[in-house]
Image (cartoon, rainbow, N blue to C red; front, side, top):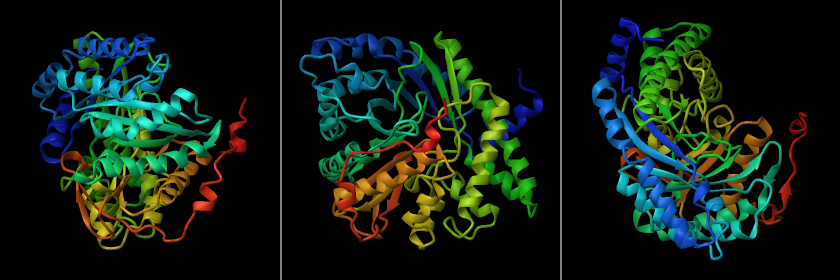
Length: 453
């Protein structure tokens, strides 16, 4: 469907005045054919395939940004979970594989490569245990590589053994990147109900049900939505929903155009549009600002969960009308460090970790880019992860945790990550222990709604 003149004018206004951008064009790439008994051959095959298929990704995306006049913030690659790619090796050296794909990502010029990942929602194999143990080293010695672990699904329940181990690994990863504020933890996500076509980092991987390769797009646009909500004035909530739906439609149409044209020029299949509202540290590009434009004094005030539910649902409804291939996470992100209004809310005491967790029950993903004191125990980290994962399992939605125990920092101090990761105030954590519960391990069974056959 061609763009009308009015749509072109509106798009120009959104990009120049309201911070509209395409957050990412992501190449999904299967590395399943790179499996081998020799880790040396796996590394060579994976590096060669990334360099070959992604060779023109960055130049083509840059051309599109210039031609269309739409900022495209990131160019990324998502690959098959590397725990699967390396498991056939006689000696699966996952750190070596991590370095190989990270070097390939540098060579083709992308910002991030996701897929240092494992699917552990029902159990852990011997090779996956080796993979898990390699995470702190692999993510601390690489620059562009991001990782994730899926520890639960609504159909299988929650793998608490994996969650216990991840709490310990996060402490190690934070220590290994202590000179950078524990930033290694910002490159690692723990999922429930992970999706196979997510173009956003740090949780992107290319699922085993996907094709050989494809191009997907993650749109953004919280500034556009905030502008529309402010312009609506004191209308009722039903009218506000319609305004957000129409705005999300326009944003998604832009993403569809860029994604399809990028796929055409690269001679690759088009994948999906992820229509998530993804904030940046810039003023005017904030999901928290949308909530405050709706009438909340600060994000986290009573009513925040209801307002976020309205926003997320309206975004999904509007975007679904604009594209037949909406996928990924598609909703509203609330990463604390990447959203200036959320940062202000935490500093002023309006937004606590507990309120943030409640809000994640209705938004995309979950506890994202949350900084906590460096002396937070591994068991407490695991318990926070378990709470968020339980929300996803019971509600049959994707939830995730990207939590950073910042070495040497305490409540109220600020940690700077830079770029799109922004900065975060260190949030207080409940002082009471969950260790005896967490260390029981085992598996929390699937809820009764899993029996849908």
